Image 1 (cartoon, rainbow, N blue to C red):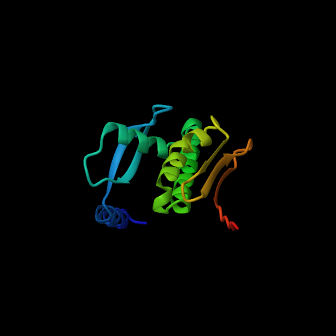
Image 2: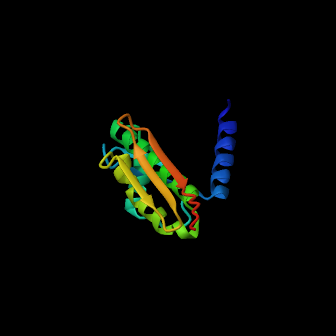
Image 3: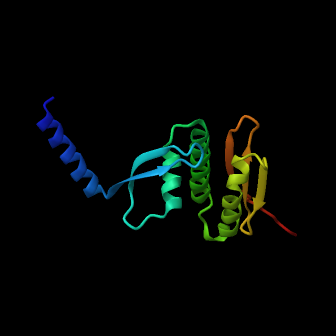
Length: 146
């Protein structure tokens, strides 16, 4: 490819990035301290801490890969909790499960089980192999008194 064609492609990429709100940053990985260049959709001013977080999420060192996997598990679990326990009567249950997410993912606790006032039960567990399970159970009680 000719140099002029490459410059045109780069110009188009820059225009597309600008339209998408992407800006280019360089920051150190929090683990290996190597500087990482990345594009990020940042419409406001970005703190050094936010840049370091994004650099870490884009770094290829082993510690960063572990951290990326951890954050993916936490984010996925939290999205599932928010979806499973979206009833307004389950707000406290949802908040407790969300606050326990990092402790479950890090295996500091292996199970949490909570029952909401509406009878919904939330179980959040992690197996020794690292499989995360979030379960919602509704208690249906039928009672008759004579």
